[in-house]
Each structure stands twice: as C-alpha cells, then as structure tokens.
Image (tube, rainbow, N blue to C red; front, side):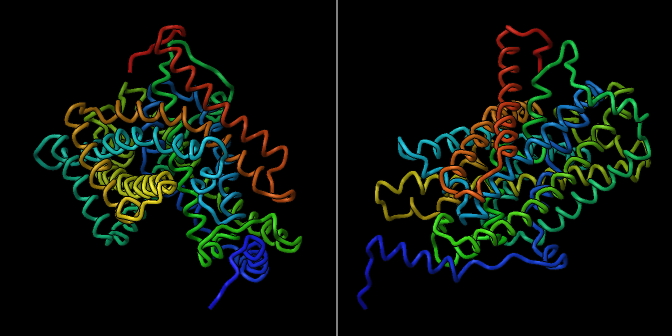
Length: 472
C-alpha cells in the first residue's frame, strides 16, 4: 500500500495521534494513588545505598549536626532537578538522554558529556558498593573482602544476564525499606534535644572540614547524576502523560502540536508526577535524617567511623547499641542486602544508560549490527565494564569508602550539567503552559550552582588553596 511520507503528512498524523492517544490524567484520589511509583522507586533504590546508609552516619560521627543544613538543601534542590526531568519525560515521552541528543551543535556532544564521566563513576561506584556489601559477609564467612566482593559481583552479573531477579530484588527492596523503618524508629528513641538538631539548620562550615567526606554524601543522597537520568526511564515505564503513548507509537510526542485541552491534560499528569516525586523525596529525607542522628548520637561519642573493611561492623552498632544482638545482626543482614540491591540496581541502570548512549552515538554511522543492538550492548556492558573492571579495580585498591568518595566527587561535578541541560531542553521543546515557572527555573539553576560550588570547594582544598583537612 502506498503511503505519503512527506513531512507535512507526518506532522498531520502526529497531531491526530496526539489528539487520540494520550490518556487523560486520573481524577480521584484512589486513581491518583494507583499511579504512584517512579518517585517511590527512586527513593527505595537508594534506601540501602551510600548516600543513605554509609555517608550519613559517617558524617554524623565526624561532624555531628553541623552539615544538617547542607543535606536538607541538597535533598530539596534535587527535588527541583528531578521535577524538571520528570516534566520533560511526562510531556514528550522521551527519556532524558533522547532529549540531550537533540541539543544542537556539535552533534551528540551533550550525550558524550553525560556518558563519558559516568564510565568512570560506574566502575568506581560498583566496586565501592560491592566492597561495602562484602564487609558484612566477612563477619560471618571465612575469606577476605576482595574474595567476597568478587562473588557478589559475579552473582549480580548472572542474575542480570539471566533476567530472573525481580523476586530477589523485591525481597531486597523490602529489607531495605525495613532497615529504613528500623533506623527511623531507633533514631526516635535516641532523638537529641531539638535545639541541637535545629542548630544544624544554620549554615556553617566547621574548621578543618574535609570536603572529601561532605561532597560525596551530598551527591549520592537520593541519587547521583546517573540516578537522576534513570528517573526518566521509570517515568516512561510507568506511562505518565505522553510516555505510554510514545512507547506505543515508537516515537516522541511533540507537545507544541497539542491543543489547549491536551496541554491541560498533561498539566494534570504533571501534578501526579509532582505528588509521586514529593513523597519519594520526603521518604528519602527521613531516612537520611535517621542515619545522621544515629551516627551523631551513637557513633560520635565512641569515636567510631564506618571505614573501609569495618563498614558493616561499625554500622551494626547503630542498632546493636539500642536493641542488643538482635539489632546488631539485623543491621548486618540489612547492610548486606541494602548494598547488594544497590549494586544490582546500579549495574542494570548504568548498563541501560550506556547501551542507550552508545546506540545514540553510533546512529550517524548507519551501522546495523550487534553494536547498535541495545540488548547486546546492555549485556556487554554488564559483563565487561560493570563486573570485570570493578573487580580488577577493587583487587588493586581495596578501599570501598575511598572509591565511593572519589566517584561521589565526580558526581557532584556532573550534577550541574544535568540540571542546566534539562532546563535547556524543557525550554526548547515545551510550549508555554508546560514549561517550568520562573520559580522552578531559578531553583533548578541554583541547584546546579549549589553542587558546583561544593565540587569546586573540594578541588580548591585538594590543591591546597583552601585550608582544612584534605586527607581522606
């Protein structure tokens, strides 16, 4: 059958599909609640990660509540960045990386800017997270940390290649959430004088601050730069706004071609996305606060700091000091499952990001082989970059906290580009009424600046221009 493939015909067809295809937003609260998911997933994925489980008690032990203001600011500002990411995917059906590939001159430079630094972050973070998980196993089984981190990574690799890990991931997510609830309850039992916590809301920079401790915490909390891009995949998977229809037709939706009524419908979807993201961020902040309180109230008086091969052992005392042996061993199990789940999630997320990015970068070369097959690329990245290379790195370095600190600093320098590029594509591709308000625009721009300032501060301290304790 002959078909007119002219641009005019395609544009007309696109408008007709937009009119007929995008689902109306849910109206009542029961329907709204049934659509919650991406923000909760975002929070749960990080509940057992470095930004929630490792760095808050570590910073609390070292500095008390002095940086409470910074973490509240980081969490709030990440809300604005992720809200703009969610806005883009909800209104266009595109993932964030698909949006970045359309940034003009030179071709795909924005995709390179995202993918290239993340190659280094992924290797270091996977090595550090799996090494942290291994610190729990060496308390129970013979063998050293390097042996067990190798076993952990080979196990997660097999599960990801096999594709039969959803049940295990659900169990791990349940344990991570149980850990978060246990931490919150325990934090309430040792809750400090409210004035001590409130004093931490006053911006301050203690003398001899080591920014290699602070910057990774701020960058990893909730999610780092890569985790922010994954949020757009979860929006698309859930089917918010134009996302489900874009998946059905195999191309992005152009919101500029929509009617006023359709744009109003997308605004309804944006309100669902806002509610979902807000609940996830509030949950994440409560978890971070709980572990900060536990680190300050329980570890700081004893001079204990979760470090390298003693990560799980020291973290076990957070619950063990209050609930005895049951609390200690629950914490050890939870530390392992929390880090293990984060390794699994991050390997999968980075593999998808790199496969997507590689496919986008190779598109201009008109290749039609396995190197443009995203499923092949995903598996290749899982085996090579996200398993073999982290194992080799860890056997050489062997310091999980140090590796996470280095990758966290790269993430802090990377987050501003995510924030500012997302604002750019939202203003370039979205019509009036769907674009961010002046307040959201300003807040997101400030968010990028916030992380840039902390990253620059670290580098100034590293090269000796800024004083303080620069030892890691």
